[in-house]
Amino acid sequence: MRLGLVIDLDTCVGCHACAVACKQWNTSGTSGPLTDESPYGPEPGGVWFNRVRHFEVDDYPHNKTVNLPLSCMHCENAECVDVCPTGASYKRAEDGIVLVDHDKCMGCNLCAWACPYGARELDPAEGVMKKCTLCIDRIHDAALPEAERQPACVITCPARARFFGDFDDPDSTVSRLVRERAGQKLLPELGYRPTNTYLPPRTAPPVPTDDVRRAQPVTGVEAWIPAPKPR
Amino acid sequence: MHPALSVILFTVLSGAGYGLFSLVAVLQLTGGYPAAAPGEALLQLGVALVLITIGLVSSSLHLHNPRNAWRAFLRVHTSWLSREALLAVAFYPFALIHLWGTATGAGGLTAAAGWLAVLLAGGTVFSTGMIYAGLKTLRQWHTALTPANYLLLGLALGAVFMAAVHAFSGGSDPLPVALALGALVVAGLMKGIYYLWIRLAGGPTLNTATGFTRAPVRLMDPGHSAATFLTREFGNDPGRGRVERVRLGVLGLGFVLPVLLLAWMLQGASAVWVYAALLSALMGIGLERWLFFAEARHSVMLYHGLQRT
Image 1 (cartoon, rainbow over the protein chains, first blue to last red):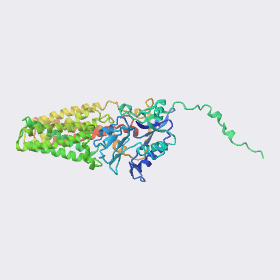
Image 2 (cartoon, rainbow over the protein chains, first blue to last red; image 1 turned 90 degrees about the vertical axis):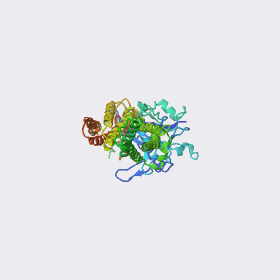
Image 3 (cartoon, rainbow over the protein chains, first blue to last red; image 1 turned 90 degrees about the horizontal axis):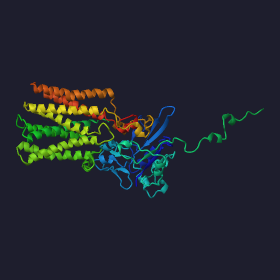
């Protein structure tokens, strides 16, 4: 099993709901707390497992805003695990999830240095490294209804731009999406072989939109304004 | 990368200590050490161990959870940091046996311990270099030049220390001075090659970091309004002008000035100039270590506005 996320850059609206849902779930979960530094001060900071960044691609008039949510890619070649001197960082053989055992971490930051995606953040209050767990305390929780055994970010996404599943299963939703939409990995040249995959924006609308205008009941403002009533 | 003072102190001082220990021990074991006063070799080895110990203690200062530091010896099969920790600790018993052998004049097994200590010292400095060279995320570090620089700079600084301690003990043999001069020249050449090499473009760009490789990409918003762990750890950019000024300081103070002073000493100048050479080399190589961090651009910064690494 190789669990991970597919993120659709075509439909992501950059609302940060995934980041907030992640923070909410994990700060009260097994990784918690996700310590905040001066949350009500002029420069609020703190630990986040998922951050959304906003980019402009291409030049005007062909420019497009792309929102890029970034969290742990649960790489197949996870060098953050290799460089860890204490064995606190490990990759689960059964589902490929990369985790940190906070009881073993000595807070040397080397795993964060080895991660090209910025997925790891040090919790200054506890002095240990923290990272996305793919909501391991949700996805394997048999007490939850099956539809809810997904990461918090996926469940909350209002644009349905996030998908969770097994990349080793060729019939899973994530595998099908990657196949059909030419899913891309970030920084492939570094050789980390990330599991999380990004679907590039579509070049054509997924459904025909030529007739949208014609099908509208109101064709113009004039038709919409009630005609003046003679007195 | 943010240059942490504890890591700069650790790599410079312990590198110099391991270099000094190795040079003195090899000269002793091959019978070439030009001791002027009784106990001089002991002083040399003592200075080396003090430097190494100050370095190692300061390296533990950058740990955020030091009570788990003992676990750092557990991942020798994958982690260069683990290997460095193990080799650094394994060095001490053999170094102390060699020290005891030097003090009592015992030969035989203590000589074997000396050779082993030299190997472990070299292995420790090599591992320090490999910690940085193994990180693919920093193209300025991901090169064989990194461990080569660490080894040569440690040897060069150790050689200048040896010449200084030799002069302090009242010695006037030209061998330590000539060794220091030669080591500085070789280390300086290697550092020059490194500075030329990192000018070559060729690392991850914002295009490969976002997957949009057929159009220019610009960061509009990093998604947070204040500094984060990532920007504090990786976001240090001292600016082009400052980097070039520091580079001049590295080459001038670290290599040119001490080489000139040592060459002048070989021509017959007073031995007190070796202290000036030592101070200059220490400052220059301290600056070199600062620049090594400040100049490295982590690929995470691509997601914070950097166009290329």
